[in-house]
Amino acid sequence: MRTVQNVIDSKINSYNYISPDALVIDALQMLNSVNLSYLVVMEDDNYKGVFCERDYTRNVILKGRSSNTTKVGESNDDRFAHRFHFRIVLKAA
Image (cartoon, rainbow, N blue to C red):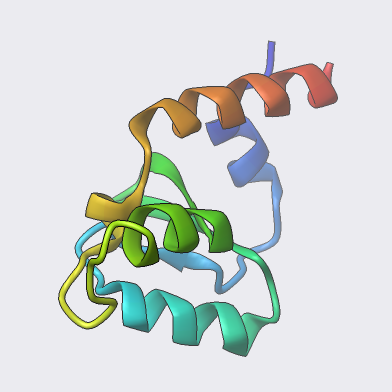
């Protein structure tokens, strides 16, 4: 069974990775620059999850947080990482 790490390792290096310590405002600017709706959250070489526009809407705006002070890791739903992993495994099989 393939894991997220296997999928990441097989991909060409891209620029849609971000640290969980990065500010949400920086993530939004990066989303705009790479023209994608998601960023892969990595800490060192470890997969931590995915930051997407939906995370921004639900976990920053609707909770009254500021993009200038909230970190990506604080805006990410931990359960989402597991759902994303499961979906990748199913598609790769």
